[in-house]
Length: 341
Image 1 (cartoon, rainbow, N blue to C red):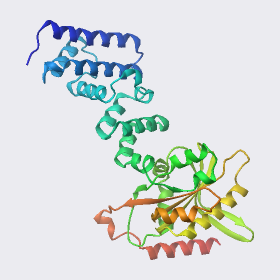
Image 2: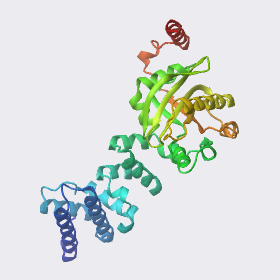
Image 3: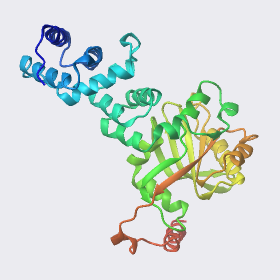
Image 4: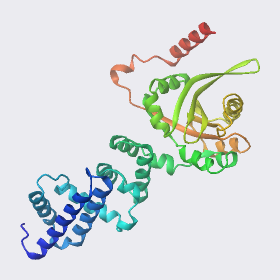
């Protein structure tokens, strides 16, 4: 359907003028200018929906004729602009996190999120962490919002940490953590999971979140005349503290919290500097009963969180028969440490 009347051409001239003004003001397509422009075009499309289904097709064609070198005004993209304006009905209230993201990121958010709250949460996290569009999509598909913002968390952070560190630490915790690069198998042991996390440290750090710096696994501490080994030791630059992670291949048990509390005391005494915040412990278990964990942490004086983790249940068929058994790995580990000791 070809629309050809004065009213339509006024609408077209309005959009053309906005594009020209934005081009003059924008330098190399600055995101904020582009996002505001696309929102304004979206509002114009909504306000002129009386033209029916052919309206957007006409606009796309005529904008292309007027601005042959301009990109981003396809039928598909104009529909995104309409959706964007429908989601956020007042440009004055358009949050900076949206205007500072690329349009490419905003398209992904429109496609992948279900609510405005979820959209805004991911937008803020993207700017905070510097996520590419691919990493943003990965985080949405692995339900980071549900695992971090909405998750029921078992911690004693509010009791053991001052504000605002307690809130920041709580916001950092997820449940569950998803280590999809580790294949699950029967009777998997903690050391095997630990070795896979270290071997894939870049992926591990992405899953842990912003600010984590890896310091070592089986980190050695001597307390009195005894040797102890922390599964994983990190420093978090946002929390400004050491983070000790202990891995358990089974269900959470209350005694695990006592041992981690002991480790945190040792780290605070031996590693913590005077400008560091209190060290934090995270127990990662295959299963966790929230009430049991809360009881176990209630009278613990060091900040500890308990979360579950998930592994990938996909193992290529051609590799299934070649994977070592838990017994094989235990023997190798025992042999390695008996030689070193």
